[in-house]
Image 1 (tube, rainbow, N blue to C red):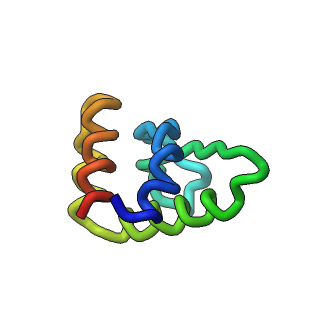
Image 2: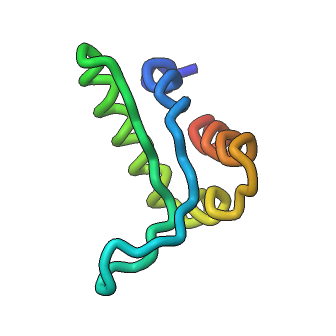
Image 3: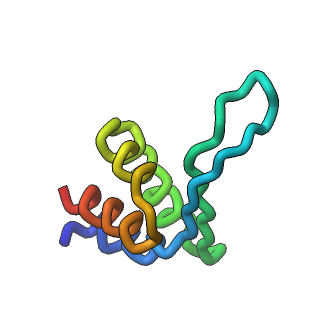
Length: 85
């Protein structure tokens, strides 16, 4: 496993759920929400994790798979598979 993946692997225990609400009428529906928590001393790992997550979410297939996951296990499996690529 590459060092970058090892350093961010522990961050994947974040909570991610699908939401179907609107912040304001001019914003599109919110479909994915990630809650990411890290220790104060893990700033570098946090930034690496957010960058990796951002890269994953740019991929339309990954986003579609996350949105169609019906359970937390499926959601995590999509993330795990996507990171391994």
